[in-house]
Length: 324
Image 1 (cartoon, rainbow, N blue to C red):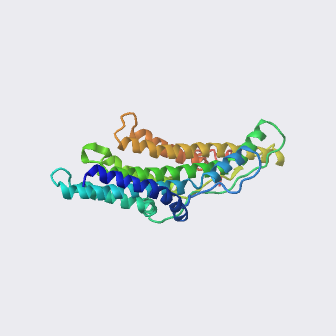
Image 2: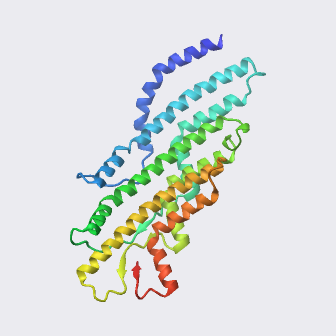
Image 3: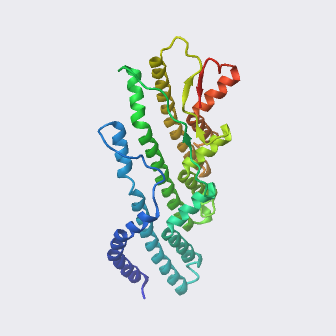
């Protein structure tokens, strides 16, 4: 039978079968894969509520990506069968490794949730210790610019954290699919080949993004000996300040701390992408830049611990701000 006739029949079959599979497979994968962090309850018309709505409205994106993975697995599986047929008909022209590689990729795409779990457990070993916060201090008073900054961070900190965690999760999911698809390439593709350093790091970076909260806890524990970020501020020298004024100062300190922590999370997540670019052979990326983003982000998220260490080093703990 002519190969072109076989392909026409296969694609005619897929034109009917694939859309049905795409629709029916989404609920299955939606139950198997869920985002690691959400922003919580949404409501109101503030900026934080808008970000929260974006997070809640994007939570089904993982089901869409999983359904697309299932679709690609179905197509590549049929492609593997056709390549096997071609190998049987003409073994000199079509290598046996062609259908084998495609069959492995198709099976991996069908088993995407299990591949994702493997990538996650590779770095965390099932440890779910995430970054914690010791609470916020202070109550703003008045309606000045500083009170507006406090109100902004109170409204947006939790939704922004949820948005960044959702982005890391979906980015990790896409990297897993990219890594699986690369298994069909040849060793001539260098770092992007099936056994290349770039492909290996693609899976590892995906695992790091899946476990971004746990990875940050590991950095914090390494640097400061605790999984929790010290965010509860208190003034060790408050002579001349009334109670209301002290609460106002503490609320502004907490707002600045929260803003720096958001920047720290962005830097930390970006650091993993830079390291992957280094593994891919990108000349514009450097390992030093990636590590700087990772450790800089970790220090920003643990800014309270950094300030405590600086004050203890220079003997300023008696007249500074203590973070617990």
